[in-house]
Length: 67
Image (cartoon, rainbow, N blue to C red; front, side):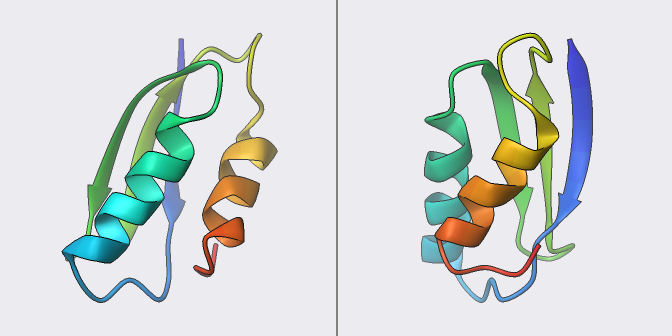
């Protein structure tokens, strides 16, 4: 397992947290996601053989947030 912390800009409420969490959780290979509104981060644990960090960042950007 690998882990990464992604800085996420533009989140302002719990709806934003849910949108980022749902988008990243939907990726095959993601084991866990913990999004912090206060810190503006997403801590992601994932299987590097199944998903790349770039795909995680792209999923967040696709939701309209800055990575």
